[in-house]
Amino acid sequence: MFNESNFIKFLKPTGVSLLTAIALVAFGCGSPQNDTTGKISVNGIEIYYRTMGSGTPTFVLHGGPGDNLDMMLQLGALADQYKMIFYDQRAAGRSTGDQDTASHTVEMFVEDLEQLRLKLGDGEKINIIGGSWGAMLAMQYAM
Image (tube, rainbow, N blue to C red; front, side, top):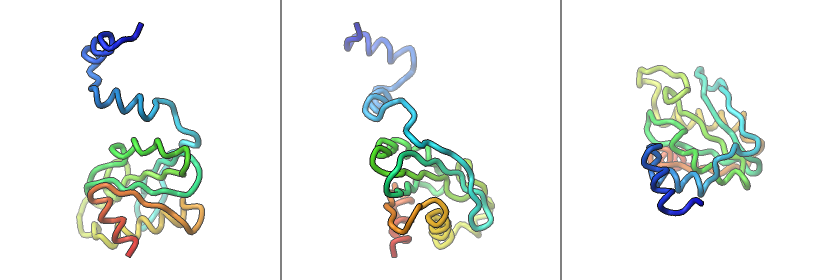
């Protein structure tokens, strides 16, 4: 029987935090439908992306700059209603890009998103979710 006492005993030796365990239960552990990964060329670099689900394309912009999409994957729970599109921004995570910050302008990050919209967006209407730096990029893109 899996009760609270056994649950705590499970967490300690496995090193799984309570927050992680709650997230796994809340958002599920299985692979979402239409889960794909790849790289796509935009503005002279390779952008790593992951999509899941179907519906209105919803781009998820991570924080940073320099972070990666992994911290935003909990939003994959929305894949039952939307086509969730996660990506590592230029020179971050599994994407390429010059480590020289001369190409790291807000305008270039916004143009990267526009090119991704054209290639992965499936149409004109998109949603954008951003965290921290990603929220600022979303606002810049909307303007």
